[in-house]
Image 1 (cartoon, helix red, strand yellow):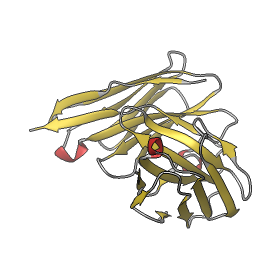
Image 2 (cartoon, helix red, strand yellow):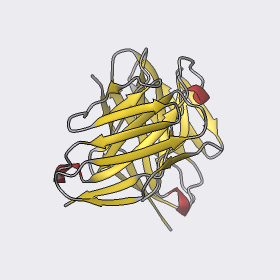
Image 3 (tube, helix red, strand yellow):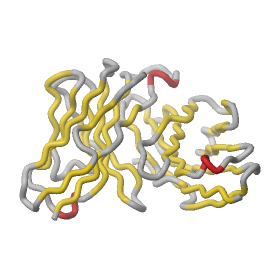
Image 4 (cartoon, chains in turn yellow, purple):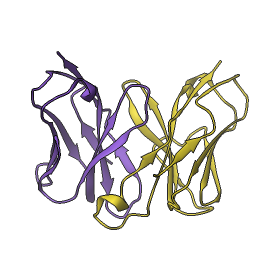
Length: 118
Length: 110
């Protein structure tokens, strides 16, 4: 069973704080992703990584950074949290898929972290 | 860029059939996903279509027409537990990232 875990289900932080969200997967997947999900806006990609120390910007990277020092772990960092970063944050992982087969493309999601910035 | 359109909400009756449509515009199409997401939970994978046609998996089927930029998810014999959001998502060729639509919230009523 693929397992993607996130460090917290709920988190409350103050404006200006540095926030770390951790994600760990146990299936040796190359790809890892960070999304945020907001009502009416759906899932939006913040950053993704296809290998250790490699990262690519997603659609909304502003205000965020990431770190991938080990294959199984992908961290999302809010350098200075702001109220507009209050959201549900979802981590996902997948194999590096160049094949058209579903198992090489399916993303497995963690349970999510609901972050509130006051 | 990419543009994905899905209806925001749908209601259907238990035991019936419902079709959730997804239209898209993209360059370099690679494949189209459908995910299910129950309220407060993470999305879970339903299907991935690469070629045109219908793929059936139990009560769920997914259809793709690449020339029309169109897909649908068909749910048969609806059950109350099918009440969830259904997310259409695109993967572009040569890229590992996936772009999600805003999702269709399906309510199944008795």
